[in-house]
Picture 1 (cartoon, helix red, strand yellow):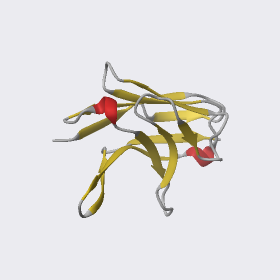
Picture 2 (cartoon, rainbow, N blue to C red):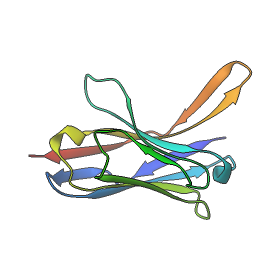
Picture 3 (cartoon, one colour):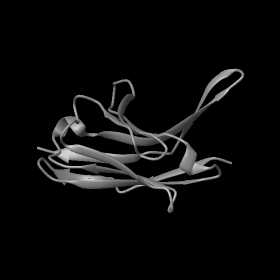
Picture 4 (cartoon, rainbow, N blue to C red):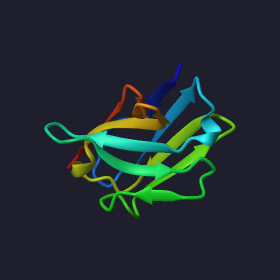
Length: 120
């Protein structure tokens, strides 16, 4: 079955960097777009970045443009999120995501999340 396992979160000071990883298994990783989402306490989950299957198209939330970089290694079935110039507002649980369309609609797959905490 589809499995997404995030890692790399932690506590970092404002201005610091972290690199998140998401190891995928159970599906043909190389043909699926992958995304990173985040959810802060008391807030809705928000889309951070998306990368298409071959990495040709990438989109970012306005709040992270110029600071975060999404990438993927299809040989390792892994998607990454390099986060630079972190600010306290980036504090959240970060989730890896992929999705597929079924006859009943969109089916999303999520990892368990990795916590990122940015101290001021």
